Amino acid sequence: MNKIKKALITGITGQDGAYLAELLLEKGYEVTGTYRRTSSVNFWRIEELGIQSHPNLKLVEYDLTDLGSNIRLLQSAQPDEVYNLAAQSFVGVSFEQPVTTAEITGVGPVNLLEAIRIVNPKIRFYQASTSEMFGKVQAVPQKEDTPFYPRSPYGVAKLYAHWMTVNYRESYGIFGCSGILFNHESPLRGREFVTRKITDSVAKIHLGQLDVLELGNLDAKRDWGYAKEYVEGMWRILQADHPDTYVLATNRTETVRDFVSMAFKAVDVALEWSGSADHEIGTCKKTGKVLVRVNPKFYRPAEVELLIGDPAKAEKELGWKPKTTLEQLCQMMVEADLRRNKAGFSF
Ligand code: NDP
Ligand code: GDR
Image (cartoon, rainbow, N blue to C red; front, side, top):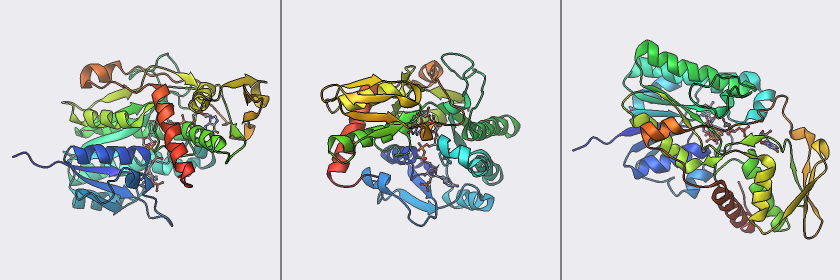
């Protein structure tokens, strides 16, 4: 009989943590998921997926920045696989809180790597690396060997954790893998990120609960995929014969402006864009009403202008390929936000 596999997911209260827990439970894993002690713990994502009370899911309080906590967690959970998804993951906030971001997002994963080295070096480790490490891009499209040039404290912190994962692989033979994931979205995305901010606002405007959507840089281009498919990629990365680094992306890029138009189209509103830079607006073609406005307060001190990833290595070696189109993803997110806002709640 096959031994039941055990996985540890740090950051189960986040978008990816919730989807990954769902996937691993479906695969028959015993899953330990960590959450932080905060004044109001939020389990809305695992509740929405209906897995909060799953008999094979154990929720544990934990903080990535505490080495002892990491050691004790590995001793008690005894995982075969660790997925480190915990991070201060909002790029905008990283400019306001660079030191906290460095401690959590940069040094935090080293606590886990050290704990693995001390408790059980056979544990397989996944580090959630990011396309933000490419920042001011040095090649198009970006792939595993494209030089890095991070443009935010978040990107710099993630780059440190990425190289530490590679370093523990090479120095101690730890099965340390890094997934360089491009933006991935879903109805479970946090509302501080641009796609969900857009779909939630479009739903509210459609329902008469909001007048105007205010955004920052509309020209930024992103390679947006569907989070549920990306967590499948994380799992495949840890099932490979050898530890390695993989890009997961769709190889399509669109501007924030395009995503806004797409989201309004999902509620049958055609937008017309006029003005430029700080004064750009989006109006409803039919009524002439202003629905979108640029507000420079959402600009960042340094911007990542263009991201587009080449996932060819993941397809060739792992058989991983994105399937959902951006139009389908956008539609799915708008529909979920219409449902939530109609019911009078939206997280
Ligand atoms: P989220 O922001 O939704 O989730 C982050 C998780 O980390 C939350 O559960 C959060 O807990 C937890 N966390 C934050 N600080 C700590 C800490 N000190 N100790 C323990 N847990 C902590 O991110 P996503 O799910 O979108 O992303 C998952 C990972 O993948 C992140 O590391 C992110 O940086 C990375 N990534 C994401 C991409 C994306 O497009 N989504 C792309 C590439 C990489 P709490 O709920 O308490 O805040
Ligand atoms: P990003 O995602 O920074 O790529 O990081 P985000 O959705 O925050 O921004 C994408 C682009 O949209 C522009 N933008 C705005 N962004 C936000 N949040 N709010 C706005 O009002 C707004 N207006 C324009 C941004 O300037 C940016 O160019 C995400 C996170 O999930 C990271 O953790 C992850 O590593 C990367 O994706 C890949």
